[in-house]
Image (cartoon, rainbow, N blue to C red; front, side, top):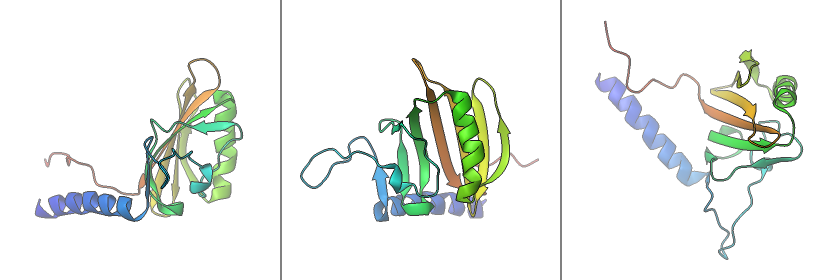
Length: 151
């Protein structure tokens, strides 16, 4: 039990310290002169990004840098949900992600693994047109919290 608590505290502390050493993308991000920054997909070199897509800064939360970041990207794409599913199905392997599973439906879900991280991609129809894509990247094998009951 003590080991589990230690692991949970270590994970939280690591995420907090990692946020300090990398970047945290938030809607309030500004440059030194106080001007708001525009998020760049170039900050995520380990993921394919569709053409004519925009990052939703209000719903996006990222900790870390380069190809060791974790967090959630929310993308608005002008392409249809089916096109977005096909795009990620085809392009993820080129970025060294291995497919674990995928389900195409009204809300499609795809899961990939790369090194010590797992990416889950959720694709749904946008309110007006196009698609909403949510990509969540987390450490592989992260312990559940709270842990399941011991039987």
